Length: 406
Image 1 (cartoon, rainbow, N blue to C red):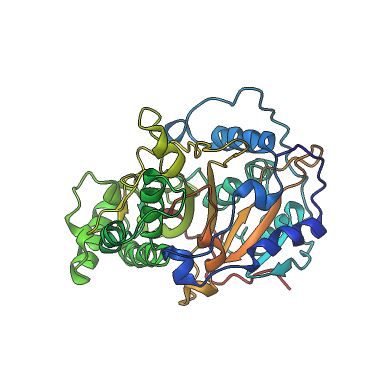
Image 2 (tube, helix red, strand yellow; image 1 turned 135 degrees about the vertical axis):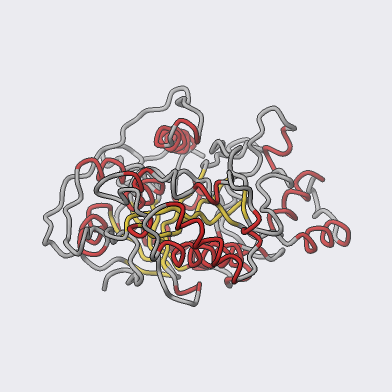
């Protein structure tokens, strides 16, 4: 990619989201073999190789030490800026919408956040400087500012169709000029169904919220949870007592805070966000898996749907050809929406970190329908749906999200 100056305005943002106009159906986006997918993140957003290098470095610096490598890419620059404060009572302008996605500039998202997502005990809050600084990281910043303390990415769910995977390996052949490793990686990617993975996360979150309702201590919460799992005949009942499934609430920082849960489970609620990432992260493994995906990596447990994320280090896909440049992950915030139809749900995410005075340009915030979100990019071959906990007094996860704020 040749480096070029770009000024990312609403007009160019409208052009960017036009690439999302060729979005497949939910089932296709979720993992059917011959689906039409979006290209690379860099191509879609008009980014140079240097831009991607800086984005990945900033993404890594936003992660907690246990979730990613604590280094910066050589030659990367941190020209990220914290957006200015917005008046609490200023209403947001309408977003620009096209093809299942609405887009706006970061300042306008702050205004919407203050009107819709900021409430604490029913009162609107102005986004603080600390929150605006977190938001400025881009896609990960949107999830970060809504989840409170950085989400740990541990309670993750997905769906992998084992029969489809085996049948496709047996009954289909590599495409023309496709290596065996590339073929196996593609078949594995196409065997994941994001629609079913999302549904699994929603079903589990519903059970967790029922268990939280009347539990004023952790022991009662666990007892309630096991009762709910028994009544629904859910395989999670048989998770080890030390499993993150049972310890997730305890390990949520806001659960311990006085103005959060204050160790009272009934003051918390389970909410959802999503992460797209690349499977080939084993830097000691074969290079082909880092280029084309690791068919065995980050598969969910077939009984529970749980994904072991302990080996996720947010390492991007390795280039297979000159000029390729891949982003290391993408986050989308869902919250606690109650819309039953997955494709009518709204996922909030961003294009890149906020750098209005560089060639990269200002950050834009997207509100995408599920089929748009789940279609992903060529940069990613895994999509997991995470459950985390936030205090009920927070409204960063409203039941109804109005896309685009007309």
